[in-house]
Image (cartoon, rainbow, N blue to C red):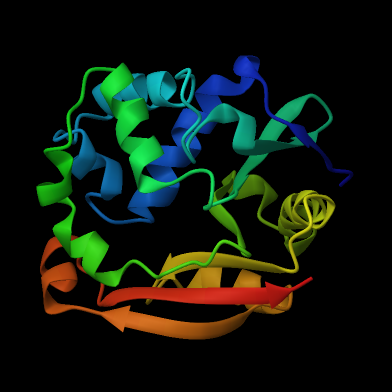
Length: 207
């Protein structure tokens, strides 16, 4: 199965919004964006995520940070790669303001913030990885992640990180197969109560 990877464009907004929602939930009832937007209605969430990915302010969810995997003409996978020194929490809040949401979301995501890892300005971050069920092979993941890491190298980065929930066995296995190592974990009873997972782990790969 031949897979190619390209930068996302506005024409890919539907699959990008789906990736934002699915990867943030990671099989759970609710995810980060359910709390940010204070709703679990999927149609409403996807509408907000489409808007967020196209705001003038380019937060880490912006479509310009995404890559799309293609098998023939079918879109089969998505990944986001961004620079945390540019795509800060302040930028995220500004993008939310542009679609009508204020900073009250901070209180709702307090459990997430307790377990969020600290990333330095010399690190490139991968997030929102999603591959359609029929295309979940290591080769597809390798192409998506590899394209993102190439972009990181071209921007001068020498290490790449990603964060996944502790207990996300499939995601952990994929990243480890591609050479990533666990560098730390943060656990919280509050996180477990809210998300039904014990916390978040970070994995890193030197480029």
